[in-house]
Length: 504
Image 1 (cartoon, rainbow, N blue to C red):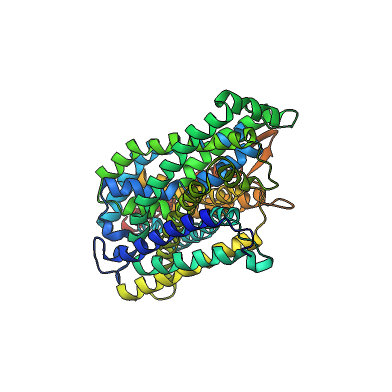
Image 2 (tube, rainbow, N blue to C red; image 1 turned 30 degrees about the vertical axis):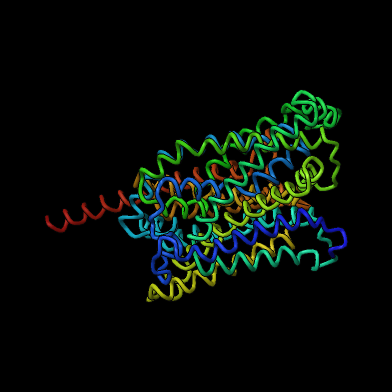
């Protein structure tokens, strides 16, 4: 299993992994609070200021998805993989306008999850359960994507094995993650995010400066990539006509879905106030610049002559080829830690949701705060096991598809959450019916013969399945809300007529 191990890179990798593990366990004492209360364990006591929130949200949103999955798609297809850049730009005006409003409502009412807000707004337990189920389910493939990123860099270090033994190093990392998340809650990823972001920036700046310089400049990089894509359908440095519709809808749909995830809302609701959220909405675009630079590494891999059967291996092999072993180990550690932070927040967000919106309302309404926190800690472990199962059993062409599949489901709660922040016109029953239609249609469109597929051709046009499904969702919810309101108003008029007749 270790016959081909790169010992220098592995030593550096293990050192930094050990450092963040220690930080994860020590974090329980940071901004100390009673971790037997769910809002302390799962939201950090809502005391993270603008600076901490910036690192937490950055660590939460820019992950192994960023440094492994996005450049892998660029390596395999080309310009199409850059859809992630405009989507991360579109999201920040949305955060600025909506999330401070949600924070104010959540703080006033004591809400910890998005599904808490949904029940408080619509008083519909079926809709609350649907929102909770969607969040938990969609989080599984997203955590799985982080684990894929970790596994790829571990394999690049030279760990090899057959069958289940090939997953042993990942399983060990998973156990460590599970233990310090259980102990320290949201404080662990918040503290580790500082280290992770510094390491990622060092790695990326070195990569975008040193690698092109070694390859003859960016002109040579683009020329080599163009040759690699030449003659291949729907691959190249520019979008083909067939890719334009999917590119646009992937960007829009991903932006709509991102802050519906339990982990994204957990990061927002842990902030100290609306001002901290607005400041982050204005400064987080720095990460979008970073993402664009990282995506270019997919082109650099072609210029460096990297040839891999699995596109997810392209960036690890590029780093091994272009950097000395010790710095490659540093980069691999940055990627692995970049997976640990969001995986921890995701499991916490899903655990909070299960505890507050599934178990408490439907199984044990009389739960004490201590029981809530204990169940959430247990669920955070179970969610990670579910993510491992996704890796083992769910077929995907690209790791990125795992995130896009979750987005197909998460975007279906967009109408209930966002419409509910601004209007009381929509009915909870109608929104639940819309969710059923959207969730079912999105899942149906995404079910491919051999793997999950994120886009489909509808009426001759390609589009992201999540956008197609949420349009159907909104149409159903709007029409049914109109019908139910008209019926209710008709019933009121009928009652008024009967009352007047009785009085006469």
